[in-house]
Length: 242
Image (cartoon, rainbow, N blue to C red; front, side, top):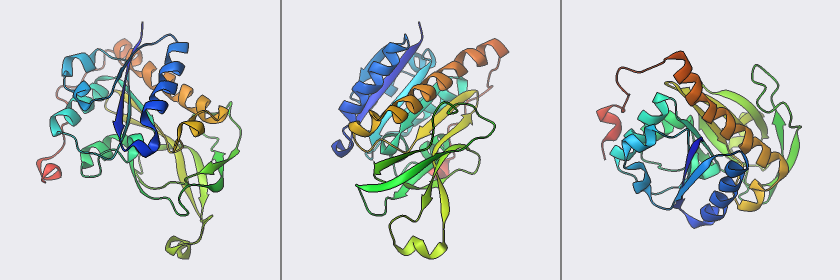
């Protein structure tokens, strides 16, 4: 049986416990054995993490020990999937660039705050991951992110919708959903998910389901290829200065 770990906490405004419960339900529907933890110490056992198929972080802001980041990073590099949403994954630990390097981006703004109506446009391209989902509108926060150029973008939203200093740059298509590789592991991110009710939107639920399945499948793919890393990347010392 495939194994998944969900770790929730941090800022309560994102309803991490409720979102974690939805993710647990989705994963169990897909036959996963799921462990849910409300402490970052869940990342303490490096060997246990290596035995997982999927890690799902749901922890907005907060502080984390570098050792725990290294443990998660090593697990993903070995083939364990990493999949999450909104601030729970890409606004998790603002002072840790190693986490941002692994996940592929960092939130910097949501002009208009909550309640902005905008379109999510599915990007048809080399990945069929979201081909079963059509463009849709959502009323929520519209995330503006600093994004790794290495990611594969699967969905976008057009800025600006709400005027602000960013508007002077003209229209831009901001990534909403992306995938990335981290060593032998697969990474999936969805910027939607400000509250649990957004995750319950059918299109968003299906995005997350697809992301969970795709990232978790990377573990078996890496095993079947016999892929291995001589030594896991654990960041650079100057990245970790406080």
